[in-house]
Image 1 (cartoon, one colour):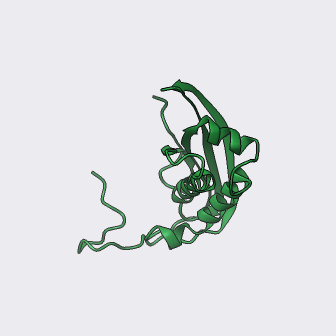
Image 2 (cartoon, one colour):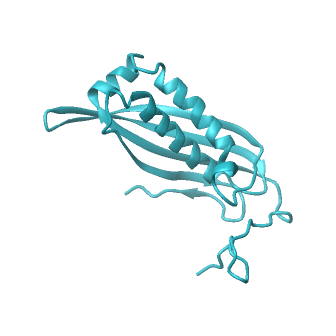
Image 3 (spheres, helix red, strand yellow):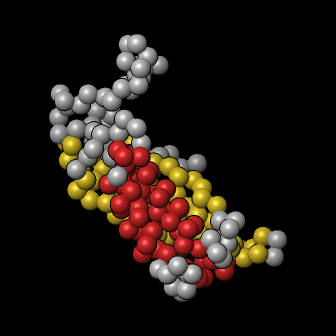
Length: 167
C-alpha cells in the first residue's frame, strides 16, 4: 500500500507540500445523475420549474462550487482554474409503478496549469450542480435521487492519465 499523502509521520492530517512539483497541464472530468419524476423532468426542459431556469442556475452553481472547492474540502489546494464547464444530458428510463421516470446527467470538466490536479473541483462542481437541480424542483418531486457521482477521466501530474473503466 502506498504511503498516505495527507498524513504526516505522527499521523496528523496535513496539506501536501507541492512546492517542488512541476507546473503541468491538467484536466478532470466528473459526472453524476439525478433521477426524478417525469413531471419534474418536463418542468425543467419546458422551463417551468417553480424557481425558474433550473439548468442555467445549476450550471452557475456548479462552476462557482468548483472554484470554491478548497473552502469546502479540507486540505485541497487553491487552484487557478483555466476552465470549468457544466453540461447536462437528458435521460429517460421509462416507467415504474405507474410513474414515468426520467433524469439528467451532469458532466463537469475542469482544466488548469498547476502543480496538483482538479479531480476534487470536478467532483464538487457536478455534486453542487445536481444539488441545485434538486433545490430548483423539490416543490414538484421530493423523491429525486442523486446518484453515480464519479471521476470519469483525469490527466496530468505524476499519476498520469486515468479513464474510468466501463462496467
